[in-house]
Figure 1 (cartoon, helix red, strand yellow):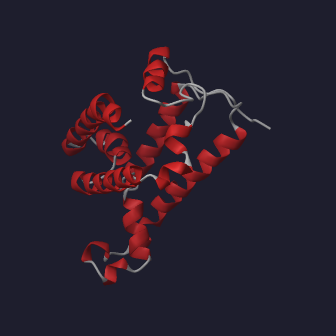
Figure 2 (tube, rainbow, N blue to C red):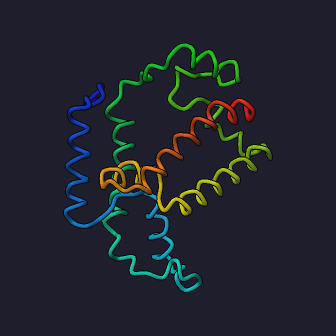
Length: 185
């Protein structure tokens, strides 16, 4: 049974994010998902091997709840808040993806070309996944946070490093989408 099939309008989602950010600012906490990996590593005892993970992870438990809530929200939305239709994608984008061999664009949320398990048997795909994972991890650490932390929390706190990081994220995304992705597919 579907509870809600329409996306929330901006005038509900935007103020909801603003309220959460105000509460985080008021409680002197900053939002960001990448810090959860550091917290999980500290919980697992990585601080015994590396000083980077040697901190009191208990003060960051609240952020783990945010990550669990995001996963639970995705699960609920996928199973109970959709009628199965895919959001509208411009026809030019669908044609471009089809020309690159991505079937199902505009029909499936998770096109088979990107989300099939057969991809793990291809050495080229495994190398690209490993390289991409390393670059994301390195970039997140080098930038001092992830896209959600900088774009949502950092910009709302008027932090110049977050503005620079977000500009870099957009430039990197545009370069990947327009130049690298066509070469990889």
